[in-house]
Amino acid sequence: MPHAVAKVHDRIVAETDKWEFVEGNIYFPKSSIQEKYFTGTDTKTFCPWKGEASYYDINVDGTVIKDAAWYYPTPKDKAQNIKDHVAFYKTKVSVTSD
Image (cartoon, rainbow, N blue to C red):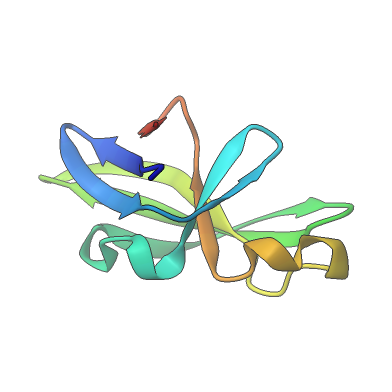
């Protein structure tokens, strides 16, 4: 069975056996993230086909990684498969899958 893991400083911040893969990014179900590491930010971006993205900082062992993850609270129709999913910047978080 496939497995995906997101880590910061060798600490697992998300882990799942079921995810969505969109535009080269693994979108983890929100239920698979370790919420204690995540804090919402005011950052917003817009994608023409997915909608408005919101962001999380990740705080692990006192190190805050700014806007390291994003999600679409109300994705557009074509992106409904990533509703309630979170993706990570590969330059900020180690994401692996098998």
